[in-house]
Length: 630
Image (cartoon, rainbow, N blue to C red; front, side, top):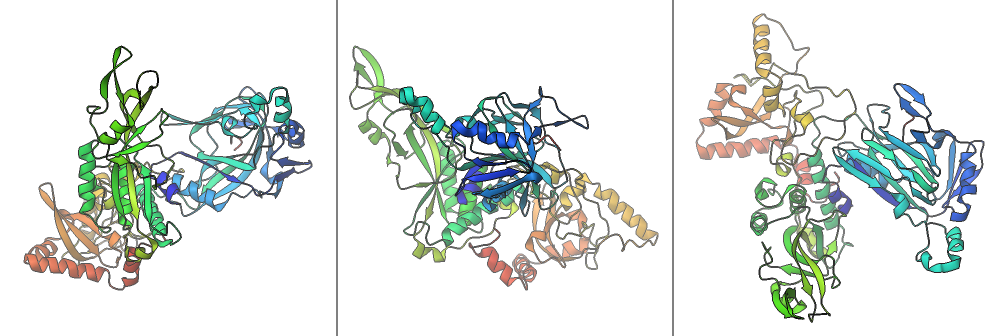
């Protein structure tokens, strides 16, 4: 779970995986025979014919019509409602698969469901040109393709998005032949015909609006089940995808802490850094992390050090109450020694690494194991438990001769440096004292977090009055008419959808600029002068307390607690112009010591009756945890 959560930090448009069947799968099509998977290679044409005998040519959508054209799509299909399953798979995707899809593609969704659409059969020569899948509702966000274990070559699934391409070529990665079959000689053909692949179901899920195509099948038969993916509700334009992903990582770390069976004697969890770093950045990170605690660690405090998803990972682990460190690693990337060394400092160049020698009448630069030991601080701890499947960034340090002796005995090797993040996990007996703290948007972002509604029916407040701070003006939030892809993961600011939306107390500042709140305020005053009553259409807000202030350009902003909203997440920063002068004077007029006490008292009042919720916040063991489908 922790590895999956870490892999999910970066915004994605595609995710893949696999799971095993405990027994062979039997699929029966209405009016047909039963086909069994996995299929012995020499028997698969006969076995799959049980499905193709009742299959129809696969159509696709074109200009509002459903057509069949083998130049565009050459395949056959059997619709899902005519299929029955038995044996090792009942057609329903495992909960772990759906949860992986939710966390990696639509983290703002409460749950994801998959509806079986059909089985697609691509025989030799089969293909499907570039297309997008048909949207079926506002909650339909993507497609999932599940490969049944039958030999094929070619037929790669290629998914394109924003200039990037992901190629899923199961024809190359499946176990479609016995190992070392090229050495079987005259028996090779027989061995291949007798080979049965493992009962593994491989899958790939992706957003439906991405362009994708299926390459030409060059041999065998590619058989897949196509699923439609749905979320439990319409996309939330105010959802903070980054915060949700970061909090999921923190909760995963907290779950590891709470699991006494996980490394009961303690240990070190290792993660490859996704970016390259200079020594000054790593030193700044270590100093910043040493000064923070689980309750105040944030991306802003390490902004001069770690970058993007590396920073989020470090903050999530620290917020779970764990110690995070960086390590500088030297390794031979393409050689034979397969060793890794830890460096005291990240080198800026290869100066000092290896030395020039006279060898076989020429001068060359080389390095021996002893010289590497002198250059490094020691070997990297082999006891590190490595998690996450993401690839770390590495920098070329040197390409030179390596060996105990030089000349014919030495080989040319390439050495790289990279950074890893390590998280120390205490022994199980000592973990009871570890306390974490829930992450908030301001702790995982450098810029403003997305707007958030304090209540489902709430409208945003206008200027507060002196007699209690009632608000009258409002602006509506922009609607989301079409299914939205999960908001882009913006490490430095709000998501585009949230930045363009308004209509909430938490989105006051952005609404003032984007929705014309000044005009709305003027309109409200004019209506009040006419004696009109808008109580039926607008909800009023009252300022309970100003908690603190901060400079904002040449002016000042005030942190406001709204009456009736006791969740601290509903407090908002308001510009001076949105608050009545008497409220500001009352706050500013207090002596410094009294004002600070007032802030503390107001915060305590805001949390009155929320002791249980606060205990949950501070506790590390938190539950919050149409016819053109491929």
